[in-house]
Image 1 (spheres, rainbow, N blue to C red):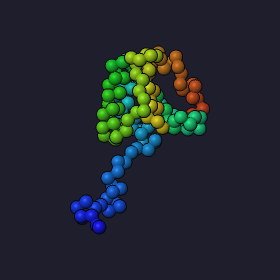
Image 2 (cartoon, rainbow, N blue to C red):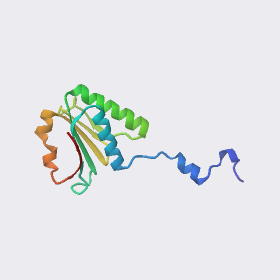
Image 3 (cartoon, one colour):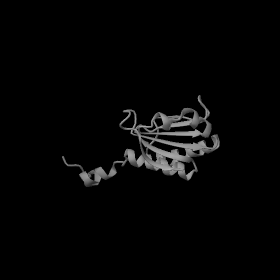
Image 4 (cartoon, one colour):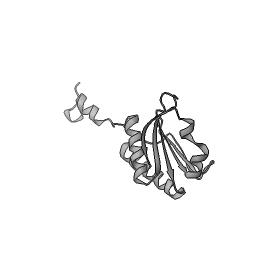
Length: 138
């Protein structure tokens, strides 16, 4: 028995109902845009896909303090979770172990925000020096 017309949707209507998620490149660039707006410094987007299978991109940036990192974390939540329906798999922030480092794991894109001292100490750019630098904002 056919369903009433008000309940039936064409294939194109059904596909338009699906949420469109950002691809890895779009997500990485959106994260760069958000952290740049919140005045993170020395932003680097690395393509690590040839070096590891855990992620495609690393986004690295420096913050002045915990307050700035928290503002960035909150803005990421608002713009990615609420507007783009994308949320991190895991977040470790400056208040947790290894203070001075906020890590937000979005699967294909991993964000690393550091205080200057912590960034120098861990030197991820040095550890991942074989990665392709996609973008650098000083």
